[in-house]
Length: 458
Image (tube, rainbow, N blue to C red):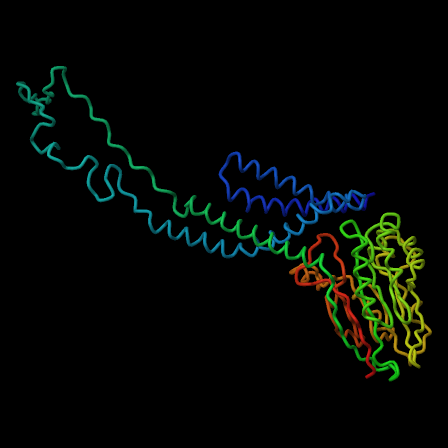
């Protein structure tokens, strides 16, 4: 319970900060105070709560949250990326507006003087001239006083002295330098519209790719120890099928059909087959019984099997005809030669308290070193330990090829290879993109994949 609460709390904090940023850029910066800003704020708050609710709720069986929650998660991710990228040009545009505003603001004039230097009130004919009365006022008959001062002038009106004239209007103060609300608002709205349309378009393309048929890739990998007679041995490799709330039986049937058309010698399902229990997903997994190969179909656990009732799935897959390699190996005798096919459990099992984590010694110890060995291990990172045990080739999945660009850059920080073929510490490694998806039903830059690995004698 503590682990679930900790996960939910961390998730809520992260998504809350992301949505605060999105609120600022998409709502606060693009609206004036009032009704629409309040509506936008409430909408962002609801979406912020939807994200952790989906990730936690789907684990508890609330599958109706999956489509809206995971689609928003993908849109949120791309909005965050796009708006972060736009920060630099937006900053440059704001600085340019500030310089332009400063350039058009006139210098401040002295008090009571127009900007052109003319005294307020002008110099028209009605203005007072030296020695002349103002506004038609007439001098009185009084003589100068004892101090020699002139007598006061009295306006020639029946009601007495003329009222004091109202002061001239004061010009409105110009905007503060660098502050141009209209243009800043227009700039923020333009960035928000661009980010929103782009994110929606990319996610739409990604949904179509993820829900479409997996592409078939073929790769040839030479093994120095492979007997000549076994040259061309073919292994249909698939991982991360992720049978779950957003996929069903048709998803499994399509993958089985693609594999069967390959007429492979071996089938290797390299983990993360399911996202749910046997009771929930047993019918959707049933088409796996139709897998065809000359020398057998094999399976190793991925991290998601340990979230889904791994013990029940091991029994169910054995019933469907897949041989589960739990820290063990089998000898494959074919075409007059032999190789070892080994498998290790995913490290997640040990971390979640299961007794059976990866045991390379159990899977690889005591074998004939003259025979080539192919290891099935869900996570590519296992290749370092595999190399220490003399493995010739490791087949892995787990990464989804990154699934959503540029997320592949983060995956590369944890795994030695994100997708494709490489050699690590002398051991060859092939990582497939996987045939399904996890979380958002979106794939961008990493299409779903089934790979036919053809072994060649070097």
